Length: 112
Image 1: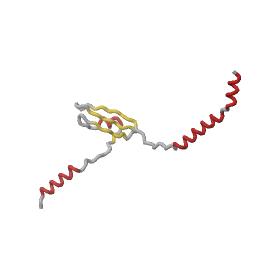
Image 2: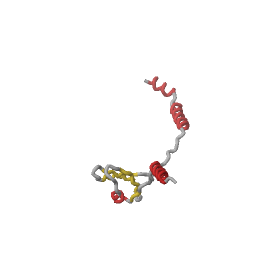
Image 3: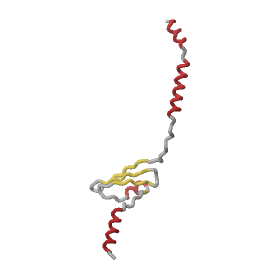
Image 4: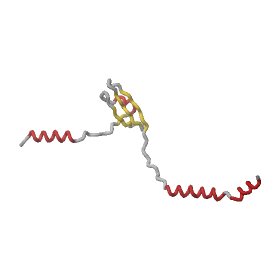
């Protein structure tokens, strides 16, 4: 009925929807170097041949700089029980203190 309203609503919908995002994958330094980038831009490229992420940057003239970064899978650290470690430390201190006798110190002082 109103074609202009339909076109306007489609245009507004396209502008409010975010652009499609994806992970860019390349194969080695050659693939990262072949990636086209506009001047004054940067991108992270995931290397499929090695655990590397390439930071590709271009200056105002469009000259490209490649910087490789090594990556590895993240491993969660095991949480330590603070109270257990404190108890162990106190036990060790008690053993050290109890191992020392007052009589041995007294003999040394009287001998001098």
